Picture 1 (cartoon, rainbow, N blue to C red):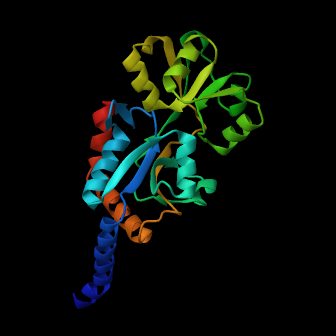
Picture 2: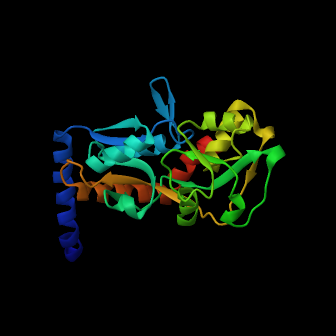
Length: 256
């Protein structure tokens, strides 16, 4: 028992001193993607959604003085690069991003199943990426996918358009200006139910696209005191929320 206390005591002292330092500083800024329903929902001044509710509860459990800011995707990434956002959510893991953020890997904020949505009168089947060639697809501006798919898009084998608003992409698809939308399954189904156009579109699973976990991250240029202690604290609480089923319960609130 004495040995256990000997090992635990330094961590407790570290947490207490870090908590006191955070309380004396400016609010910790948690930044996320503007217009990303049902993960981030903004109704006038009220914020809700899967990711928002999880981060709100995380902040409360950690006893942090923090605020949540909504930004366009490109600005969100830039703000994490320069440290004007202390934390960001929810990001796929990628080597380029690891240069400027530290990932909280203990539990993802959500898991994305990336699928294709087409009009029912223009369905097509595929087994490989080459089957999408010559089909114009639309996807969220700034998003990255599997390496093979990213390379096919960058090398212009797949005609594409980027969008900032999923509703506008659905309108383009219905107007026959694009052939498919490459998106998070939960997001598209949320919009289809909201705008009553489910019967006009078909969902195509992508056999070569794995489920993608999206994580909370901390900027490597954050100016907050002792970011290592903050990371440890957030990892611990997120792990507890995952193991207790709390993350699942919040997700099901918006997807059932």
